Length: 434
Image (tube, rainbow, N blue to C red; front, side, top):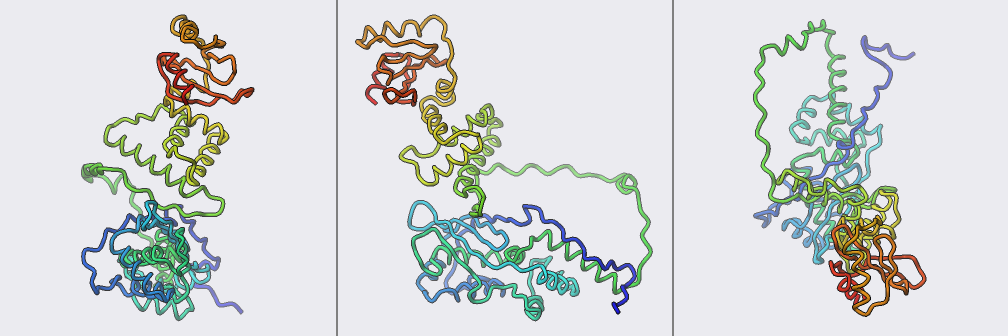
């Protein structure tokens, strides 16, 4: 025979609140270097020191741990991004480009969370401690008695790094772990997020369970009279809005993006976020966005053209793939457009993609000038002048400049080459020299 339900108790399980994307992803700015270290412990709280102990149980190599601690002390760990079961950050090492470090921790199953949340809701002191960013020993002990390990034990942390060091962990991951201890010192909800639940979701669920627990322990009170909002707010003085925050001197560093199956390339996202931050900073400081008039395709070409020109690195190739996919073009289309953009910006891209009919004037005088300079007679077509061999071409732009193009013999595959010039002879000489 099932127990008789308490009056007002709904025996159906409550629906778990759906967490928003911001609740399951938190990014923390780079922690400044420590001004004094010596023999001071790296973490102040007992749970932060427990994290450090779990890290140090990973490795028997004191040298790597010591170097990782030095890296963390000197501020070499960039912004840290925490998601359920994963911590990601870039750590600056001996090479110019930082290494991408990752740390995994098993998340708790839903039944474990139910047990933990019921234990917290039943003890008002536990809930009050969490609200003040504290984690009492009794709370961890209660969870441990139920078979739930909030803090990582020996062997729970799974490290990974893009560096060639095969240490377990390497000094870069060790630096990330030490910095995580400093984050946990100030906010134990970071640890709970690592275990699978965000702060807002946890507080809402704890509030609901605490209210239900309190209702079972006291008699039902009569409902308080309702007051219309217009009466409650009548006569209230609303203070003026505070002054806006000062504009920072330079754009902030974007967060670290984890590499997830099926997601966009994290380094390409890093490049896009950096560019967006620079544009937002320019808009804040000048009040205008010089790139606001660009189409999505033009902006994609501009972004790709900002990458280094000396060869395509893996990061650049990933960015090209992302931009080509987003604009419905191929990577070859994008590479050709990048060459045109580097020739003449948005005007150079228009010369590549949009033929037009120039009025009488400089375009008509170009063929005699080329012939007088000893070149064969070029074939005109709209704003194009093509060499009889079919391998060189000049295109006249709206800005009055001549843009050089080149193609393989017998192929109609024209690529921008050389620097444009207002004189067609100089433009052709530069094209021939290239």
